[in-house]
Image 1 (cartoon, rainbow, N blue to C red):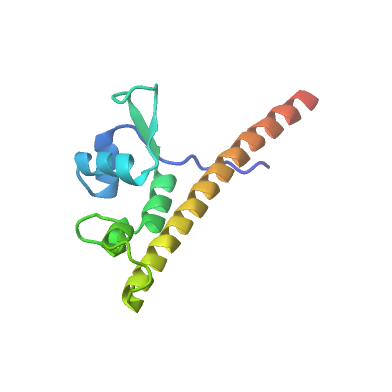
Image 2 (image 1 turned 120 degrees about the vertical axis):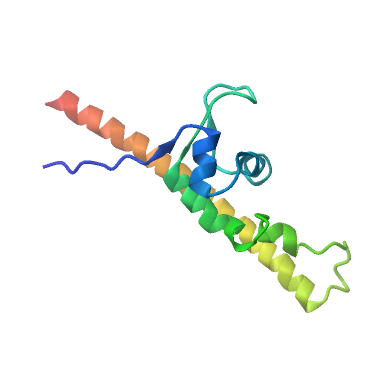
Amino acid sequence: MAQALEKPVMLNSWKEIASFLNRGVRTVQRWERDLQLPVHRIGKGKRSPVYASAPELKFWVATSGVNHTPQGLTLERKLLPSTGKRNSDSPLQISHRLMAESLKLVRTVAETSVRQQRQAEVLRKRIIEMQSRMR
């Protein structure tokens, strides 16, 4: 017997996305603009309808560092040193810079993982289509 696949929960508006993340609409819109919150648009315009997948949002929250700060800023913004001098950086500044770089790497891995998951879903659908043609 084929096992039924669970469909991811879809959030179909800014209000639903904001409620899911327990934040305001303007905050999640800013996160999409500045922090690459995984929100998809139907159409190409800036005001076109949006939707998001709950698993993608959970993964983004877990890897972005957003929940770790009370103001909703990423750790990356708080930890980046304000000076451009690298030779005289203190160990604390170096640590902060390394933390920011590691967060960027984590985000890249997360994006790659989501992209691979989507590709796997497309391949799974194609396999099912091919199997149905062979019967």
